[in-house]
Image (cartoon, helix red, strand yellow):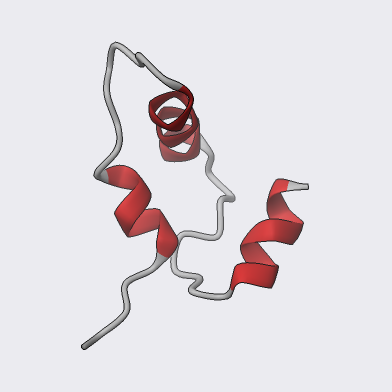
Length: 50
C-alpha cells in the first residue's frame, strides 16, 4: 500500500463554503504557496504549522 502525502488527503476535505475547521484548514492550505505538499513526515508538517 502506497502512502500518500497528508496534503493530498487534506485536499479531499476542501469545501468552498467551509462549514467546519478541517474544511477551513484545507482551504487555507490550498492557497498556501509554501505548505509542504509532498511531505509524508509528521515532524516536518508539524513544525511548519507551529
